[in-house]
Length: 209
Length: 208
Image (tube, rainbow over all chains, first blue to last red):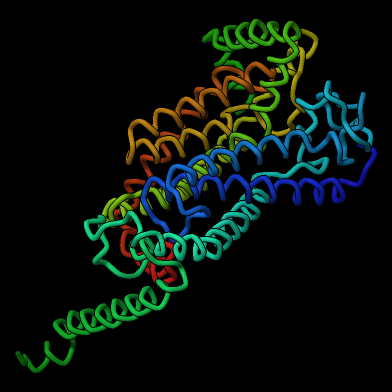
């Protein structure tokens, strides 16, 4: 490799982040269209949301693996061999595309640890985008003849968490989620204190019931 | 230690069978460029590992009821723990036995389609990770789990075809992945309160 591995790593990191973001967004759309969590849909239609998810994943894969055609990196045409050490900096051609991304991590490719850092960040961003755009989707859905959702939906009575986003946006649901978490913590604290009291030293010594 | 293991491998005849399979399979490369390129893409460090991560991510949001969602989410967290554990187990194998890669021993007979990795060959780390993720998916959704096992097997095959692993590395990786998930599931009962509390906090943020 004729380039500093750190420069190569930066290129890979930015490309991988975008790839992981697109694919996470797509996966989130497919998963939420199946589970009916409308608050995270990018489009207010179940079937379209699912197909959009598939399209986002495929677009992410296509862009990531085809990027060497128009972006310069350690994959200059004609220099892409299995061994990433001898590569030149430049744009790839179609013949090199299959192996262009196969760069050893010691030469600037992303190792498992780096991917384990970038992927969660991309997934969180995908969730945030879905939550923001989903707010608009829910508004459109609610206008649409009280939506196709019915009161029979699985766990509509449960507020907070993902269940609360079946018919509400993320931002409308958040206060209930936090309230529910707070009440759970208070309950746990009380239960914990009660259990601890059963075995307290004071009781053991004085035998109080 | 390494010499003893290498000798044992030779005596059992595993090494020869292993080498013959990888040489034969890799010998098929170079005929159809499109297929070779497809294998290069599948064998890459990015596509299949991301697919395994996405499967875990998707499971988090997939439950149709609250109970199912909690089950999926806890399984996903156990699956992630298993992935970490799989890396540790593979590392322990690697420091015990530095098995050379096929291209190191049979470089003149192989058409290498992937960069020459520098870490030991046995067991195949990416396959271990793939099988650990597939095992997690399989426990909550059989159909999806079988697809995941298929994807992990394809990943292993592509790396075998590329000439960077022996078949026994792939089998070893698969066994490590499944075993590690089984151990992580067993340990789950001890960590249940911690995992449940984590899911609760995320639910408080409207994300679980």
